[in-house]
Length: 278
Image 1 (cartoon, rainbow, N blue to C red):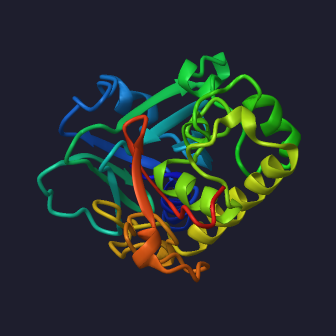
Image 2: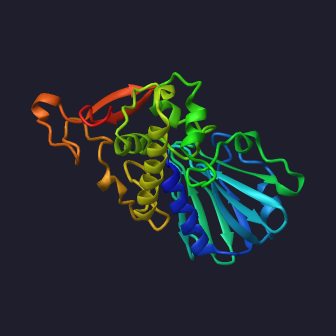
């Protein structure tokens, strides 16, 4: 699933290519995504001008001048293609949005994504947006915030980091990488972390996510940037998907330690260095 860096990369690419365009036409070829695309989507957005773009957690929000806000979630395998001309429709191309500056095509083989809208004038944002925690880069949060949130959590810290009501946008890849950089075992109970550890963890979360954004995200399976190119951050992973290898900061004998290890927490693969992470 695209995480914060991938969604930020896609949002920025759409913004640069399409900008404050007018929506000319919407073609919906398959409404049956994770949630059905509203029947009146085209009616609500055709003729409106795009005012602003925003990423909230793993959602792309496109604000229109008629008060409608498009909500886009890419699910497990969703891809966005941007072109100046309308592309020949490929299998799993479900939606094409034609604008005065080009075309946006939504491609989703697994159909776990979502494209819907809400009316900002009526302040009727869906609950899944209202219940989100703060952004990782929100300077109003600090180590004390994480410490307070983790006090009642006996779950592994890796699982707690995936809780979007605590902090948003962190998925499986970046939770493993951030915990490695912070030298914290993913199996530690969240309420066992000290203030210093929470402060260090938040700092490393921000550093890892920023590097990933600058690298265009991580391409592991389905993710491509809207121009079709791959992200680069997978080449910079320290532990994720590197079972049995030596981590970049460790001088241990991997014949004895086994190198980077993998376990499953809450159904998600988790990677860590048992020598450096405590």
